[in-house]
Length: 243
Length: 353
Image (cartoon, rainbow over all chains, first blue to last red; front, side, top):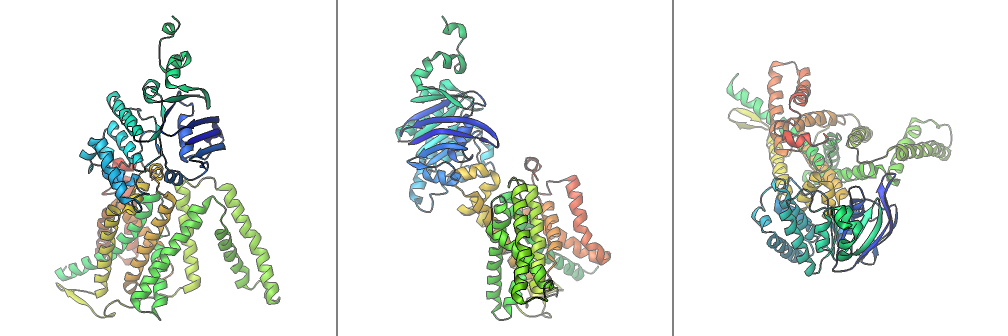
């Protein structure tokens, strides 16, 4: 579904990604873990079209999407839930969701209406607060709203950038649970997280990224049992590993 | 002061104030989607009424106004495409525009008049082409980013000067006016002892329709909401599939269109001259800041305040000082409450301007 080959990208003259290759198959949840500044967000921003790639290939659904505009890529079915949520603070909760379906109302209005109801059912709190300004929601509710807004674009692949950032653990759990539920409905997910334990918990496979390079890949189980991953990202005690 | 004179002042203040309010709303629409203050807003009013005046000589008035508004809307779109969006990219349209503007100078000044016509043309092309190409080259070489709001604001000042000069060429410097929409110069309506022209009612009515219409547009249409989304968070808007660039173009079109409409309804009262745009822009800007940038309801209240204030000032101050009132208000507001009377101080702290 999504294939990335030797991708290089960055800001201005600064090269952050130094030749990243990865793939995501339909129906998978794939996670990318790595420390601050490793290039996780840069990777997602480049795939979604917010940043132009310097070189390399991004193939989504057999189409080259590298260098296309964001709104074209969203139209093809590849949507990002950006870091720090980025909801429309000054608009109502409902308008946020409605705008998520911006490209669909004219052609598939009935279907979009159904999706709107489905999302409000998935996160009942959004239904409860549909008239409230989105900026007045709590962090967790905002993250649900951001996820809901992205789902309104009817993505084939959903990319999430640090959904757990600054959110109560219980809500992180709820959001991750909804991701597994959505995957059962056929959604493909590419998840970027610092909270490696939580994301490996729901993912099928994972990649470890360090200073712009993929240094490790494998199934979630393999990564959870990998000593380097345990030491660097799961915070396990060094001595206990070496027992 | 007698009560009917007071009423007379108030009514003329409200008329003038609603014009300011419409100019300010034009500022707000563009500011809301881009963060740019478009100082060519006043020129849109002048351009709209000039086109309508020319058309009205052989078309019915309503049709002339309609076409003038549509034409100005297109000019707004073209200006945005060439000067704002196309800032970084190579733009053939801009090169041709530059070329024609430079070409006119030696051609009209008769620099090569002694030569045959064809040679004259060739010489002018030889002068204009490299200059136009050079300006374009410098443009591309030194303009690094389109995201710099301040630079774009300065560009809109350039656009306003350009429009003013082009209008001077096309329509000369004479005062012109559209015919009164109903009645004529001397017909008047008695409102509680104050006499007003029926055109005043047209101005008030059209202003009200514009304000209400825009409110409905932003509240209830998908495109309107998408424009608000662009002003709230451009990145997020594009992640919803909204084409932010076209929304910016659209905001220029809407504010050019309503500017032209306002120019047409006020033309019979105030007359139209090629250079009155800058005064309107300054007053409109003062009103927009007073009401809180981006806040259209604030703009209406602030516009009416300034209008009435100026009307009463005429009775106690020399005429020459009237123009200074708006500047004084602008300075006072910028010093003491830069978020405006109705803007949220919290929101304005987060903005660049």
